[in-house]
Length: 244
Ligand code: SAM
Image (cartoon, rainbow, N blue to C red):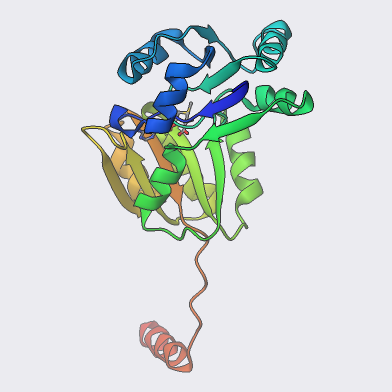
């Protein structure tokens, strides 16, 4: 059927491609991809020989207009290098314009590193904010963190190995030294999740920047523990003992 098919791919393990997504990749008239070499591997795995066209949201307007045009009579699949399209990946403008043109749009849901890392973290999942990649410049990064510091929500960041330790230190500085989890290489051979406070994790990775793809999950700001009368008495006694 004609229209736009948003196809989630694996985030590492090819076995995570859903059967329904594989079927769409085999049947689509054309597949819009970020990088034809990366997607060629997945298409081989899915048994698809369908043609690919490179697509980015900053592609020339003509490229997008042509795809919107084709959706009227053909099936156009949108695929990212990894995970779910539009999540720190191209596609938002394509979906926006397809909607405006009244095209049929459907999604083939599947893996996203953000959700996978959230489930691994052991941190609260009831309220979370996806922040994607932080700006790399120190000032812009600090501003972005300061803006969300008061939010009572778990935070989700995409990160790269070389920047990890520095980013964790900046988070500790601007958000307070909260509990956090660093997940890398999810669904791959060297999957690993490390937990601790932001400053502990920053120290851990300072000398050995980890390889591979990384998600940082940061817990919400801690509640100040309710001061019970006994706690207050104990603290007072202790302080008095230290007085000269
Ligand atoms: N669209 C993708 C998704 O749904 O997760 C994200 C694309 S974004 C350009 C790539 C970033 O996602 C990486 O830099 C890393 O932060 C994260 N990522 C992707 N795959 C991952 C994996 N297997 N383990 C940990 N993080 C991953």
